[in-house]
Image (tube, rainbow, N blue to C red; front, side):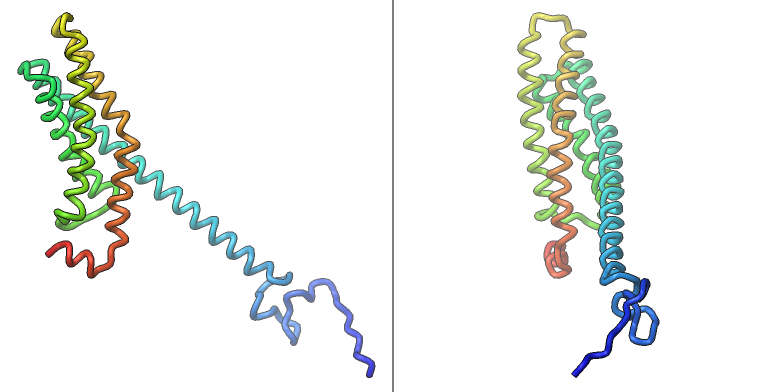
Length: 198
């Protein structure tokens, strides 16, 4: 038996049996249309993710700058004006920045609303704060001891700069920890969220 010959013309690829476009592929070329659509979808998803990351970093930076300003003012007041010990001044200053930093970044950066869960949200944040606070206390005490023979103004300036340096050094680490914390909470199921609020 001789099979009938078919002539393939340019532009026939992707056409249906009656000359229209194939309902499967929807564009000329064997599967090119769906493939390009998938690539465009992935690229647009990647673009949205980059925009989301830039927004989070910018708002986190702004909130951290405000919190750092609160901490520095509190440190200068406690250590430079009131003459408190460097460890006490560092604790008070760090807490003065940690409280607004939490609420600003929780609401502004990670856009969480409602009452925070004490066990799943507040407790991990307190652990992060205490870990970074310990480093700030150690650094400020070491700098104060090293400058014990210097004048009050110079000692206050260097201690404040060291305290700020710790804050800046922990900037990225705190972001990664908080992003992991709030990201884990965003992925919680409604049952887990309601159980945490009880």
